[in-house]
Image (cartoon, rainbow, N blue to C red; front, side, top):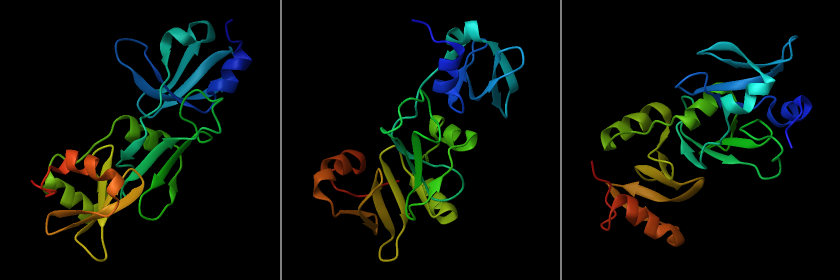
Length: 196
């Protein structure tokens, strides 16, 4: 059974989707329907794009960023996760996505820029760059699983997803949450030393 225009509006209005007008995909937000009953998508890169409803499912791609840590905005790093309570929307939307800033528990609004940071993540390439990010931002995601932030008692606080699990002091990784020890070893190595 095909969706009606009303079904499509209910599922996608306000969500962030990818459109593929050619060989390249672009992140856009679905805003609604224009006077010609064409679907309207907007993005800072493309402006407003109109797509015929009949062609919508051939030209849009739906997906969510993976649950994990991302360097969102210019402060610290954040934990993106999908909210299971609101699953009618088929793509990231303010009703079904949280972007929680690590350290202070504040939430980023679900906007084009914050979702773009999650879909196209950037992580420090090495230890030196990570330290610069922490100095500037207060913290950084090292990858989708681990992050570090400024610590009051050690060199850095260590995070696994949105859980504080230990510290880094004098390049030695101290794990306080034992159930995650193997993941920490997999990332930092058996010696639990943060190397360059």
